[in-house]
Image (cartoon, rainbow, N blue to C red):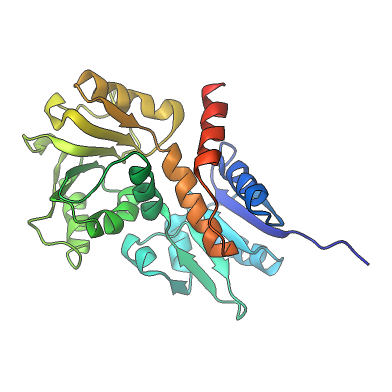
Length: 282
């Protein structure tokens, strides 16, 4: 009698060699006793749909999607969650028994759960998001549903930020959700400043005024590790005492995807602790 084969899952991106997702999902599987393997796959630009359909046909059970394929994953999925429809992007795919591909976006819920871990409550707070790309789209619905006092999207091209704000008018009125250019930032401070840009700070990056934060603000960069340090250093120099990179969000969004696929939600704290120790020890 042949040995049972583990269920197979993967993450696709380009580049993908740096991805922590295989490590995270392996730790989740060990913790929850799930029999699976999870690997990283480099996608080919222009061939996303063909490659993903072939992988599912070969028996893949689920797929995480990262840059630059989240919008193509949105187009591929025939069944979309509400949060994926709002985000216009998908980071989690799976196929049902009728061979229909489902798509969800777990980035926003992962971010909000990491805020809870950090002790930050969204309700009645003032929030600034820097950048109006796909990363911001994934955050807006869960943040707005948390009922902040105001949420401002700031982008180099203000028209893009304004268009994004308009796309979420069914959730928040203009008095609560607004947009501006990075050169026309509000003159007051914010309780939460999120760096969702790809450029970082300085040398063609962001040039931010110190007044955007106060001592009890939280400065949060969506990337993790060394890539977050310039933004977090700016926040510290501006007098902000609370900062975080995006490692917690990465683990939390992965846990939500794992729960969708396997029907069990892993504990994230021990996995985050182990990854942080590994990254800091490098």
